[in-house]
Image (cartoon, rainbow, N blue to C red; front, side, top):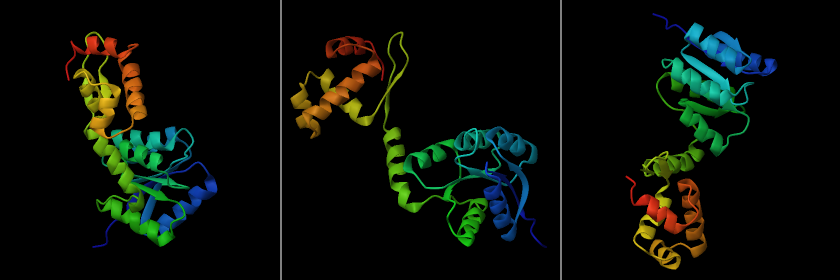
Length: 217
């Protein structure tokens, strides 16, 4: 029994590029069920067609990564792959946060790109391996972030290092002592303290410590 070709939505603002992607897909066993030239049209088409895969340009008019996130949220059965002219670590992180299953450069060879898209449909992720390290580091850092619940104030989120500096401040250590304990420079400690004060909305260390006396972590 012949398998039905996977239905794909192509969201790309530039008509020649969109046509090129369509041709590549159709030559490699995909069925292009819809095209979109902007973010709003992409979401409408995804909701209407419920494709197996959405291929979205990162520079799509109206916001490609935003469109990818909305499609992932509202059409969860659809896999989303974001295409980019040049891979960028910050953009990659945004794509991952949006829930997309892939982030690929447009200049990949046609066969390589087609294989990657077939792999996504088969349940794999398609991201540049050389760029995964910084993304994993960022997610590890986020996992170790700490939240402070302050009286009559919004919750404050601290990085791991900010949390360490804050704990040592609460123990009465001076800047130089904190620097020695954490093996960082006093300038770096002062920078972290400045960030802490801004997040807490207080003018100085004493005010921060008084505020934190009634906080929960």
